Amino acid sequence: MIPQRNHSRNVVVHLLNKLNKTEIKENMESNFVKIVECYIITGVGILIELQHRENGIPPNTEIIDSTSNETWIIKKRVHNGILILDKSEKYFECETESMHVDSVFNTLTERRIGVETELDKRRNGIYMYLIKPKKKKQKLKPEIGTELKIKTTSQPRVKCI
Image 1 (cartoon, helix red, strand yellow):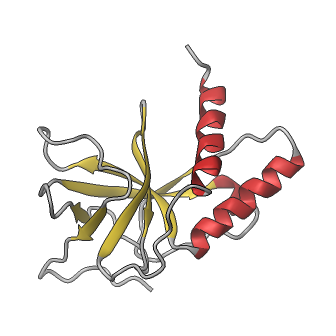
Image 2 (spheres, rainbow, N blue to C red):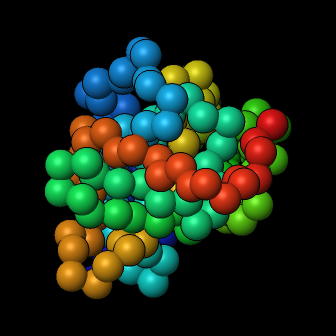
């Protein structure tokens, strides 16, 4: 069994490498998100990187695959610890539930690269969230590259600033 610390580091290294291969969509439509990356983290849930141009996504917001009609629910925003320490993490007022993940780096150079990589993600509208499937009998996680529609309701939503 891989110790948790090494597993977390491997996930971070994979995320850093994956960003260079991810197709970033320049003109995201309003009310849509794109799945950039998706992991199942034991004891935590489904950690997902979403690209969007919204002013945040409130907890309990539904995101829907229009092809399969499968729905996932945003549980909370996941902030990046290195950006928090760098005082450069982006916050949205409507994201009222959050947690953070920490990264482990062997050198200061790796840390600087990690900060720059995460800042590039923010500049491209990429943020991490925890999600859960709405129904028990559906795919656990959405496919990478899929665009999902943000469900809008007739009820007033918390306005994000």
